[in-house]
Image 1 (cartoon, rainbow, N blue to C red):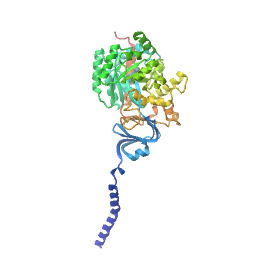
Image 2 (cartoon, rainbow, N blue to C red):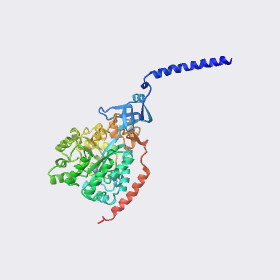
Image 3 (cartoon, helix red, strand yellow):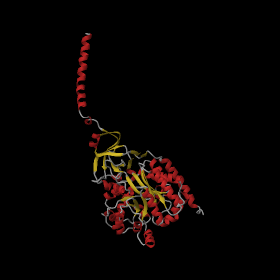
Image 4 (tube, rainbow, N blue to C red):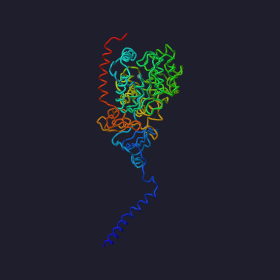
Length: 481
Ligand SMILES: [Zn+2]
């Protein structure tokens, strides 16, 4: 009996194992790829993916696979899920998935001057208020907290890359890097004593050290930023350009922002600002020019010839009544054009959704032509065209295999965004910065469901209030002799 039981057990055991054995043989005889999925770090699944790639594909129920800091695949969800398995997944159902927005010109630290002086012409605003306020308040600590405030606002509104021009730019770079944000950050060079460097010699030495410090960084592109042709001599401009070019760094500069700049340039140099800059050897494919408002057809051809990135700042230009950039003509010339907020002191916020809306409407009303700048072209300015303007189009600006994983999820369920017929029209005319729910930069989640993961929001806002009191007090007393 005992033996019979043992026999039966052995038979049953063999019976039970037989199918498993056959199964294993099938598994092991198949190529390993038949079942194994490629491992990635992050999958974003189920959203409407607005790629901004060469074909401007919009993929309903799409997905993105990310390994490290880069995109390894973009496509329909079923296809991507079949191919990849991830350590972490973000469910994007009901959201738009867009390349991170690119703010082509800002002065992040100036967020602490938000609303300090408004309703003034650019030269009066600068000379009477901003330059004195800067002389009395700008320190490394000011730049640290001001940049934190600016970066916080930008990230919350879906900006993943920004270009900056300010003082103590090494501090700006450190704060930006710590926040996990991408930046093209230019140390300002200007002909009068600046808050960080009292002489040009010091400014050039500081800038060289700054460029050396950030060389080869994965998020920060250190740049040289001669302020403008009206605050820098010919020699300063040429020396700044030479310094940038010796270090293969971009040159950030304000170009033809206001009418006075054009008039001064004609009187002093017998040329428009663009023609003067060409004459002194400043223009090149490494230059990013903010504003480019007062440019004629010959200037536009010159800027296009040198592949100068030109940045449109509609809010700032409207607020200081600087003028209207001839955007349609500039786009027609093929030159790379981006969109920007400018500093919060002249805007008064860092909201690129607002800039998209205003860029479109400003061109329409200025020409009395609603076709002047369509929504799709505006989204291009804030993404792929903005990347071209910063000369970073190989790295960012669209959701494509091989590019850096910089993207945002935008909720579309709010009353002001419902219903949606066309993604581009939705993005430009309906959605708000506050609809951005999740932000990923270089594959890292920086904001998740509107919770900031890299910055202490409460502390930053409290510090900004403290600075307001200090700045107001500094302006209430007469200027130090
Ligand atoms: Zn500016």
